[in-house]
Length: 315
Image 1 (cartoon, rainbow, N blue to C red):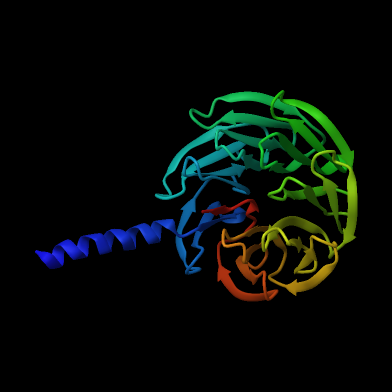
Image 2: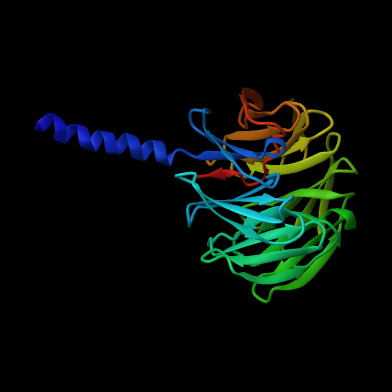
Protein backbone atom coordinates (compact mmCIF):
# COMPACT_ATOMS: atom_id res chain seq x y z
CA UNK A 1 0.00 0.00 0.00
CA UNK A 2 2.86 2.35 0.81
CA UNK A 3 4.48 1.69 -2.56
CA UNK A 4 1.23 2.49 -4.37
CA UNK A 5 0.76 5.69 -2.43
CA UNK A 6 4.29 6.77 -3.34
CA UNK A 7 3.88 5.78 -6.98
CA UNK A 8 0.74 7.81 -7.65
CA UNK A 9 2.26 11.20 -6.80
CA UNK A 10 5.34 10.27 -8.85
CA UNK A 11 3.22 9.41 -11.89
CA UNK A 12 1.28 12.63 -11.46
CA UNK A 13 4.53 14.60 -11.34
CA UNK A 14 5.83 12.91 -14.50
CA UNK A 15 2.54 13.62 -16.28
CA UNK A 16 2.59 17.28 -15.18
CA UNK A 17 6.19 17.78 -16.32
CA UNK A 18 5.43 16.24 -19.70
CA UNK A 19 2.40 18.49 -20.16
CA UNK A 20 4.34 21.56 -19.02
CA UNK A 21 7.07 21.24 -21.65
CA UNK A 22 6.83 24.04 -24.26
CA UNK A 23 5.60 22.91 -27.65
CA UNK A 24 6.43 24.25 -31.10
CA UNK A 25 3.57 24.18 -33.63
CA UNK A 26 5.14 24.09 -37.11
CA UNK A 27 2.77 24.51 -40.04
CA UNK A 28 3.61 22.33 -43.05
CA UNK A 29 1.73 24.12 -45.79
CA UNK A 30 2.28 21.72 -48.67
CA UNK A 31 1.01 18.62 -46.88
CA UNK A 32 -1.76 20.28 -44.86
CA UNK A 33 -0.38 19.44 -41.46
CA UNK A 34 1.15 20.80 -38.27
CA UNK A 35 4.15 19.15 -36.61
CA UNK A 36 4.01 19.44 -32.82
CA UNK A 37 7.51 19.38 -31.31
CA UNK A 38 8.44 19.00 -27.64
CA UNK A 39 10.62 22.02 -26.92
CA UNK A 40 12.67 20.19 -24.29
CA UNK A 41 13.36 16.83 -25.95
CA UNK A 42 13.08 18.19 -29.54
CA UNK A 43 11.02 15.14 -30.47
CA UNK A 44 7.92 15.26 -32.65
CA UNK A 45 4.95 14.51 -30.42
CA UNK A 46 2.31 14.41 -33.14
CA UNK A 47 1.38 15.47 -36.65
CA UNK A 48 -2.06 17.06 -36.91
CA UNK A 49 -3.76 17.11 -40.31
CA UNK A 50 -5.43 20.44 -41.15
CA UNK A 51 -7.11 21.39 -44.41
CA UNK A 52 -6.67 24.80 -46.01
CA UNK A 53 -2.88 25.07 -46.49
CA UNK A 54 -1.98 26.04 -42.89
CA UNK A 55 0.49 28.93 -42.67
CA UNK A 56 0.27 31.33 -39.74
CA UNK A 57 0.41 30.46 -36.05
CA UNK A 58 -0.65 32.25 -32.87
CA UNK A 59 -0.71 30.86 -29.33
CA UNK A 60 -3.21 31.71 -26.62
CA UNK A 61 -1.79 30.50 -23.26
CA UNK A 62 -4.76 31.90 -21.32
CA UNK A 63 -7.17 29.54 -23.11
CA UNK A 64 -4.64 26.78 -23.84
CA UNK A 65 -5.33 27.14 -27.53
CA UNK A 66 -3.39 27.49 -30.77
CA UNK A 67 -4.75 29.26 -33.85
CA UNK A 68 -3.61 28.19 -37.32
CA UNK A 69 -4.45 30.40 -40.30
CA UNK A 70 -5.57 28.72 -43.52
CA UNK A 71 -5.12 30.93 -46.62
CA UNK A 72 -6.83 28.47 -48.93
CA UNK A 73 -10.02 28.19 -46.84
CA UNK A 74 -10.10 31.77 -45.57
CA UNK A 75 -10.05 31.35 -41.81
CA UNK A 76 -8.26 29.60 -38.97
CA UNK A 77 -8.29 26.38 -37.02
CA UNK A 78 -8.58 26.31 -33.23
CA UNK A 79 -6.52 23.57 -31.54
CA UNK A 80 -6.29 22.57 -27.90
CA UNK A 81 -2.59 23.13 -27.16
CA UNK A 82 -2.47 20.22 -24.69
CA UNK A 83 -4.69 17.49 -26.17
CA UNK A 84 -4.05 18.65 -29.77
CA UNK A 85 -7.74 18.16 -30.54
CA UNK A 86 -9.21 20.20 -33.39
CA UNK A 87 -11.88 22.29 -31.69
CA UNK A 88 -13.31 24.18 -34.68
CA UNK A 89 -12.59 26.04 -37.90
CA UNK A 90 -13.50 29.74 -37.93
CA UNK A 91 -14.34 31.44 -41.22
CA UNK A 92 -12.57 34.80 -41.49
CA UNK A 93 -12.25 36.05 -45.06
CA UNK A 94 -10.59 35.60 -48.43
CA UNK A 95 -7.00 34.58 -47.68
CA UNK A 96 -6.07 34.52 -44.01
CA UNK A 97 -2.34 34.66 -43.31
CA UNK A 98 -0.93 36.64 -40.40
CA UNK A 99 -2.54 35.92 -37.03
CA UNK A 100 -1.95 37.21 -33.50
CA UNK A 101 -3.52 37.07 -30.01
CA UNK A 102 -3.61 39.94 -27.53
CA UNK A 103 -1.78 39.35 -24.21
CA UNK A 104 -5.04 38.87 -22.29
CA UNK A 105 -6.06 36.02 -24.59
CA UNK A 106 -9.48 37.55 -25.19
CA UNK A 107 -9.04 38.60 -28.82
CA UNK A 108 -7.50 37.11 -31.95
CA UNK A 109 -6.65 39.14 -35.07
CA UNK A 110 -6.42 37.67 -38.59
CA UNK A 111 -4.99 39.46 -41.63
CA UNK A 112 -6.76 39.03 -44.98
CA UNK A 113 -4.24 39.26 -47.80
CA UNK A 114 -6.83 40.02 -50.52
CA UNK A 115 -9.36 42.16 -48.67
CA UNK A 116 -6.74 44.49 -47.09
CA UNK A 117 -8.35 44.09 -43.69
CA UNK A 118 -7.65 42.60 -40.28
CA UNK A 119 -10.58 40.76 -38.70
CA UNK A 120 -11.07 40.78 -34.92
CA UNK A 121 -12.67 37.81 -33.14
CA UNK A 122 -13.37 37.30 -29.44
CA UNK A 123 -11.97 33.97 -28.24
CA UNK A 124 -15.03 32.69 -26.34
CA UNK A 125 -17.44 31.83 -29.14
CA UNK A 126 -15.22 33.27 -31.89
CA UNK A 127 -17.74 35.89 -32.90
CA UNK A 128 -16.36 38.45 -35.34
CA UNK A 129 -16.33 41.90 -33.73
CA UNK A 130 -14.79 44.07 -36.44
CA UNK A 131 -13.07 44.27 -39.81
CA UNK A 132 -10.27 46.84 -39.63
CA UNK A 133 -9.09 48.44 -42.89
CA UNK A 134 -5.31 48.59 -43.33
CA UNK A 135 -2.88 48.74 -46.28
CA UNK A 136 -2.45 46.43 -49.26
CA UNK A 137 -1.72 42.76 -48.62
CA UNK A 138 -1.48 42.73 -44.81
CA UNK A 139 0.82 39.97 -43.64
CA UNK A 140 2.69 40.00 -40.31
CA UNK A 141 0.87 41.11 -37.15
CA UNK A 142 2.22 42.09 -33.73
CA UNK A 143 0.54 43.45 -30.59
CA UNK A 144 2.14 45.73 -28.00
CA UNK A 145 2.69 44.18 -24.54
CA UNK A 146 0.09 46.50 -23.00
CA UNK A 147 -2.52 45.49 -25.64
CA UNK A 148 -2.83 49.10 -26.78
CA UNK A 149 -1.51 48.82 -30.34
CA UNK A 150 -1.85 46.38 -33.20
CA UNK A 151 0.90 46.62 -35.81
CA UNK A 152 0.34 45.37 -39.36
CA UNK A 153 2.92 44.86 -42.11
CA UNK A 154 1.34 45.96 -45.42
CA UNK A 155 3.48 44.15 -47.94
CA UNK A 156 2.36 45.78 -51.18
CA UNK A 157 2.21 49.26 -49.63
CA UNK A 158 5.74 49.08 -48.15
CA UNK A 159 4.31 50.27 -44.85
CA UNK A 160 3.39 49.51 -41.24
CA UNK A 161 -0.05 50.36 -39.87
CA UNK A 162 -0.59 51.11 -36.18
CA UNK A 163 -4.14 50.51 -34.92
CA UNK A 164 -5.50 51.73 -31.59
CA UNK A 165 -7.10 48.71 -29.90
CA UNK A 166 -9.15 50.87 -27.54
CA UNK A 167 -10.96 52.69 -30.32
CA UNK A 168 -10.35 50.13 -33.10
CA UNK A 169 -9.16 52.94 -35.36
CA UNK A 170 -6.08 53.59 -37.48
CA UNK A 171 -3.61 55.83 -35.64
CA UNK A 172 -0.63 55.90 -37.97
CA UNK A 173 0.87 54.47 -41.15
CA UNK A 174 4.61 54.68 -41.81
CA UNK A 175 6.49 53.87 -45.00
CA UNK A 176 9.48 51.58 -44.45
CA UNK A 177 11.48 49.21 -46.67
CA UNK A 178 10.23 47.26 -49.69
CA UNK A 179 7.60 44.61 -49.01
CA UNK A 180 7.64 44.18 -45.21
CA UNK A 181 6.42 40.78 -44.08
CA UNK A 182 7.33 39.41 -40.64
CA UNK A 183 7.30 41.82 -37.66
CA UNK A 184 7.77 41.70 -33.90
CA UNK A 185 7.77 44.09 -30.95
CA UNK A 186 9.95 43.80 -27.85
CA UNK A 187 8.54 43.09 -24.38
CA UNK A 188 9.19 46.65 -23.23
CA UNK A 189 7.06 47.99 -26.07
CA UNK A 190 9.99 50.14 -27.17
CA UNK A 191 10.96 48.92 -30.64
CA UNK A 192 9.16 47.34 -33.57
CA UNK A 193 11.20 45.28 -36.04
CA UNK A 194 10.16 44.50 -39.64
CA UNK A 195 11.76 42.23 -42.25
CA UNK A 196 11.65 43.88 -45.70
CA UNK A 197 11.64 41.10 -48.30
CA UNK A 198 12.49 43.09 -51.43
CA UNK A 199 14.97 45.62 -50.02
CA UNK A 200 16.97 42.97 -48.11
CA UNK A 201 16.97 44.81 -44.82
CA UNK A 202 15.29 45.23 -41.44
CA UNK A 203 13.51 48.39 -40.35
CA UNK A 204 13.59 49.41 -36.69
CA UNK A 205 10.80 51.73 -35.53
CA UNK A 206 9.85 53.43 -32.29
CA UNK A 207 6.86 51.29 -31.28
CA UNK A 208 4.91 54.22 -29.85
CA UNK A 209 5.32 56.87 -32.53
CA UNK A 210 6.32 54.64 -35.50
CA UNK A 211 9.24 57.00 -36.05
CA UNK A 212 11.99 55.32 -38.07
CA UNK A 213 15.02 54.59 -35.85
CA UNK A 214 17.32 52.56 -38.09
CA UNK A 215 17.50 50.31 -41.12
CA UNK A 216 20.03 47.47 -41.32
CA UNK A 217 21.02 45.44 -44.40
CA UNK A 218 20.78 41.69 -43.83
CA UNK A 219 20.63 38.70 -46.22
CA UNK A 220 18.62 37.97 -49.35
CA UNK A 221 14.83 38.19 -49.02
CA UNK A 222 14.43 38.46 -45.24
CA UNK A 223 11.12 36.93 -44.22
CA UNK A 224 10.53 36.98 -40.46
CA UNK A 225 12.06 38.19 -37.20
CA UNK A 226 12.25 37.00 -33.58
CA UNK A 227 13.83 38.24 -30.36
CA UNK A 228 15.78 36.13 -27.85
CA UNK A 229 18.21 36.45 -24.94
CA UNK A 230 15.97 38.90 -23.05
CA UNK A 231 15.38 40.81 -26.29
CA UNK A 232 19.08 41.58 -26.60
CA UNK A 233 19.35 39.76 -29.94
CA UNK A 234 17.21 39.88 -33.05
CA UNK A 235 17.14 36.89 -35.42
CA UNK A 236 16.17 37.37 -39.08
CA UNK A 237 15.47 34.57 -41.57
CA UNK A 238 16.91 35.18 -45.06
CA UNK A 239 14.99 33.01 -47.53
CA UNK A 240 17.30 33.08 -50.53
CA UNK A 241 20.55 32.77 -48.55
CA UNK A 242 19.52 29.87 -46.34
CA UNK A 243 20.77 31.93 -43.41
CA UNK A 244 19.75 33.72 -40.23
CA UNK A 245 21.22 37.14 -39.45
CA UNK A 246 21.70 37.97 -35.76
CA UNK A 247 21.63 41.61 -34.62
CA UNK A 248 22.58 43.18 -31.30
CA UNK A 249 19.53 45.27 -30.32
CA UNK A 250 21.54 47.73 -28.23
CA UNK A 251 23.71 49.11 -31.02
CA UNK A 252 22.06 47.46 -34.05
CA UNK A 253 25.22 45.80 -35.29
CA UNK A 254 25.38 42.37 -36.91
CA UNK A 255 26.79 39.72 -34.59
CA UNK A 256 26.65 36.67 -36.88
CA UNK A 257 25.20 35.12 -40.01
CA UNK A 258 24.29 31.47 -39.47
CA UNK A 259 23.64 28.84 -42.14
CA UNK A 260 20.39 26.94 -41.56
CA UNK A 261 18.15 24.93 -43.92
CA UNK A 262 16.99 25.81 -47.42
CA UNK A 263 14.44 28.66 -47.65
CA UNK A 264 14.10 29.56 -43.95
CA UNK A 265 10.81 31.28 -43.17
CA UNK A 266 9.08 31.27 -39.77
CA UNK A 267 11.14 31.84 -36.64
CA UNK A 268 10.35 31.97 -32.92
CA UNK A 269 12.18 31.74 -29.60
CA UNK A 270 11.67 28.96 -27.08
CA UNK A 271 10.25 30.32 -23.78
CA UNK A 272 13.68 29.76 -22.23
CA UNK A 273 14.91 32.70 -24.33
CA UNK A 274 18.00 30.81 -25.40
CA UNK A 275 16.88 28.50 -28.19
CA UNK A 276 15.50 29.78 -31.47
CA UNK A 277 13.61 27.54 -33.89
CA UNK A 278 13.64 28.18 -37.67
CA UNK A 279 11.21 26.55 -40.12
CA UNK A 280 12.92 25.64 -43.42
CA UNK A 281 10.45 25.52 -46.30
CA UNK A 282 12.44 23.54 -48.90
CA UNK A 283 14.24 21.26 -46.45
CA UNK A 284 11.06 20.23 -44.59
CA UNK A 285 12.88 20.80 -41.34
CA UNK A 286 13.45 23.01 -38.31
CA UNK A 287 16.88 24.32 -37.36
CA UNK A 288 17.55 24.95 -33.67
CA UNK A 289 19.90 27.83 -32.82
CA UNK A 290 21.61 28.45 -29.49
CA UNK A 291 21.09 32.21 -29.07
CA UNK A 292 23.94 32.44 -26.57
CA UNK A 293 26.69 30.69 -28.52
CA UNK A 294 25.23 31.69 -31.90
CA UNK A 295 25.47 28.20 -33.33
CA UNK A 296 23.07 25.73 -34.94
CA UNK A 297 22.79 22.82 -32.52
CA UNK A 298 20.12 20.60 -34.05
CA UNK A 299 18.00 19.93 -37.15
CA UNK A 300 14.54 18.39 -36.79
CA UNK A 301 12.52 16.78 -39.58
CA UNK A 302 9.01 18.11 -40.09
CA UNK A 303 6.52 17.99 -42.97
CA UNK A 304 6.49 19.34 -46.50
CA UNK A 305 6.69 23.10 -46.87
CA UNK A 306 7.41 24.08 -43.25
CA UNK A 307 6.39 27.72 -42.83
CA UNK A 308 5.32 28.48 -39.23
CA UNK A 309 4.64 32.19 -39.75
CA UNK A 310 4.11 33.80 -36.36
CA UNK A 311 4.69 33.07 -32.67
CA UNK A 312 4.50 29.26 -32.72
CA UNK A 313 5.67 28.28 -29.21
CA UNK A 314 3.06 27.31 -26.62
CA UNK A 315 4.55 27.66 -23.10
